[in-house]
Image (cartoon, rainbow, N blue to C red):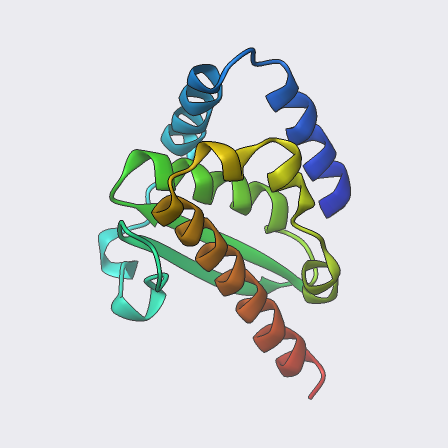
Length: 141
């Protein structure tokens, strides 16, 4: 699936919920479904700067696609990370760099999140884009 198709799927899923309590619970469920990152991989270099909680994000290039792995010590940021891993994992660097994050506005996340959580979400997206730049440069060599 393309990034846009996955984002459209997420927009449709969030449209089913009547209120933010249900959306919040859904994000928590997404976080619970995200596999835990092994403790020995939770290095300082993988910590996302700008998050209130500890959020680790790692990436590797497999068959010209970036595979992301994420974890957090807090359940809501872990749900947000799971959402982003779903959107951006197994995509090529160029598509990640050219993608829009408008789905976040369309599901209303920016209205629901506290300013510090919203900053953390933006920091995660920024880190994902940094990985995409790094892998794009590496593959162009």
